[in-house]
Length: 136
Image 1 (cartoon, one colour):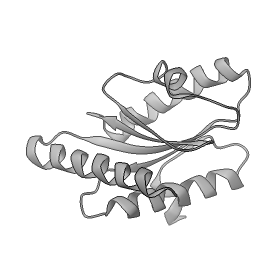
Image 2 (image 1 turned 30 degrees about the vertical axis):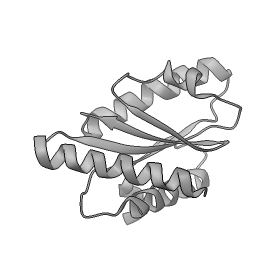
Image 3 (image 1 turned 90 degrees about the horizontal axis):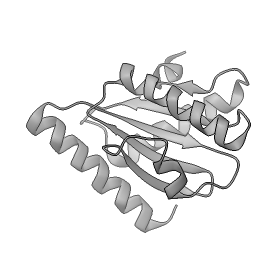
């Protein structure tokens, strides 16, 4: 992974932890996978203005669902997938989610999201999964 991208993930995660510690505002981290080309402007139409997007590579975006518990982020993820399905006219997009835990380093957050995504790819029927899949 590009060091600039990793540094931006670090800044976004630390900023999210600060907001949580200072204002007790929840957030949920996510990793979006898509097969077909997608640019920032297209994806931005499918998420809330308050959420954060960061392109990781050609097929992945790091997302922070700001001010959102995991339960509500799950619903937001369903909405994103519904919009992407209509946009791409397929069902290939996937989302991995992890709860906010300030004891985890930004690199750990990204690694866990990648682990969750690996598990999702193993199951053709699951399109959104949380960190609970790592405990199974």
